[in-house]
Length: 402
Image (cartoon, rainbow, N blue to C red; front, side, top):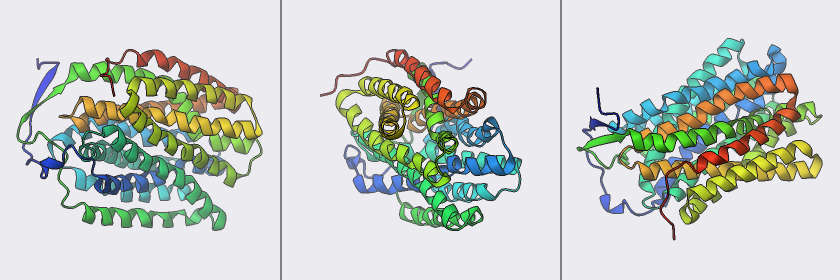
């Protein structure tokens, strides 16, 4: 039987060029790579605003509508496999094509003729998403030098900007034209993938241990991934309730469809600030403090959101958006720093945990919504999220940061 703690993998890649710049933060290149995240996740932001239309047109239950997100995010279970391949070979050129593929699939979601065809499109888009999210963060980490928290913040800010813009973009197109016009939105994704593939053609691969034997430290990886999975499991109902079913809930409360769809952009707009803040605070104070604050304050604001109305509800939504996102760049920076020789694999495991748990939670919260209503679902999701805090203290001790 192979050694559980270290499986030896031979790599044959050429060493990356410009090793002298390894410790420097390469801002321009980091921003260029992160722009792929912006475009890709703009399309990911289409799904939640489309749910009210799909529910109405296809007469779906909430739990059935949740399957669109389940398949899109559930495909992330393949991220460790894709990430492992990414540590051995250069898959970057394929990852840069994924904004186009995701754009094509999700631009067609609003006009799908059948429920099952819509599920198929979400599955293909999910596989595309898994490929991009497995490969490119490791490249960003390499370009970040010693400031990995900062790099991960910029990478994740790109995604949050995309998800924030997505609902506004598709709601505007539907409002100004009709839902039949949404397929035209695939054009920018195709154009950007072509452009980035040309611009990043000569950028070196991220692997810094080319030509050497590398080990997969399974014991060390599990010591980090299992507690992180516990945190994300308890947090996932909060995440999915707020980001998937918020438009549905607000429409049922009497808000028009455009404003209800735009509420996702408000939530994620504050999430951008939280993503930036989380990475910078991680570099300064360490990941445990950032994660604890993120979970506690986000959980509290979700409970308050379910118990308030009007301006107070908007304030709690803003706090929720900010604090709930602080944990993600901190966790991503943690796994990138702990496993520099297996960055794509570690990144794949981490994001697979996040996306897969969110996928399952999306269906569970949809079922809860059908059974106990939106308001109670939001309340319960906030209370459950508090249970993630003890798992943070099971993570390995961290070095003191100055």
